[in-house]
Length: 425
Ligand SMILES: *Cc1c(COP(=O)(O)O)cnc(C)c1O
Image (cartoon, rainbow, N blue to C red; front, side, top):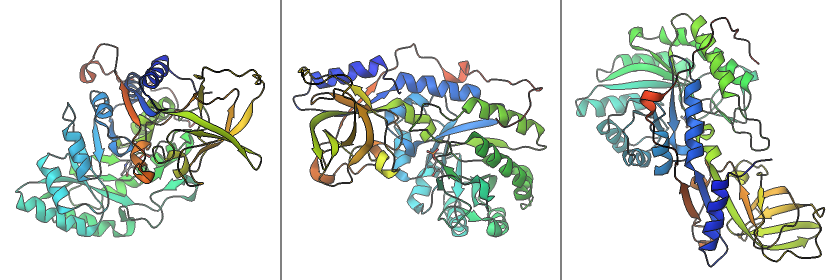
């Protein structure tokens, strides 16, 4: 199954040695994050950009690690504007989300936001008034909630049905007119973030095909179509929490290169993934406090819980677990073949505090540490850490060991052979 980098393992052992109490801790492997983002960016073809959606994980160390490589950040609140302002490097940023405050729109303009993704017709009028007051011309993208073909839905669909996000296609002409008629707004592109948890390469390719098919129609709605250069196709690339095989990003990029080359007047495509960028670098470590059997089910009770790592309950999945045997009292009465299926729970006084029901462990003892990988996105930051007044988990960011390189000069753009076909795999 999943393997634990030795740096992460050593850090956990070290944290334990320095703590009087059993521990729960998040460990972030920044070197691993850097390796991943370099690969993701190197695979991008010509005319494709990637902005990191920081709501997946906006910790300063994560942003600083990504900043040399990505084209920018995608944010959705005033608090997130403050997060990127703390980052060592200033990068272009874009602002989406329903219910933006006037004060947030003003703050974004003051921080030189690259584009604001407008989510409703009334927001267009509000933004025009703010831009006028600040004597500024603001680039905007219109967020669209298109009617999607049935075959394209994933687990968490943000478009193609009733949602608070974006503008229905039937209202798009009115929205485009409203932007065209706003002297302080400039329509630069369209935005669709329709999916989350997309694990199917083929379906994501079909989604891109669908957007590119709609693109000339959307663009033609404007009386200044030449200003419209970008199609932001959102994030939503999934992470496979149950198996090792992940979304084939390089095959996907290869496909993008082909379709963009064969599409006349193609847009600059912009992606804004969150989960697929930061999930892999995070590890949540929980120390075993107790074991018991209740009505025939074996429970392993650990430090921490879903108030610190809500992801498995939020997505109702059994999270994978790596067993780190650290106990020093190997008991005689256990044999390695004593492998059992455990239910892994935390310290909360609620039966919902379950991280996995299918945890296969042998020789699991009090004092061992169970490590939950794939914890770097929507992990601690979506959790209800104040519940039951437990202390917050330990947090460690393992620094990058390799010498600093500068993304802008060393970024290798992969070019693909024109002969290769655009067949979906
Ligand atoms: C949350 C969000 C993203 C990132 O989604 P992931 O599933 O983490 O890739 C991108 N764009 C918008 C508008 C979002 O709300």
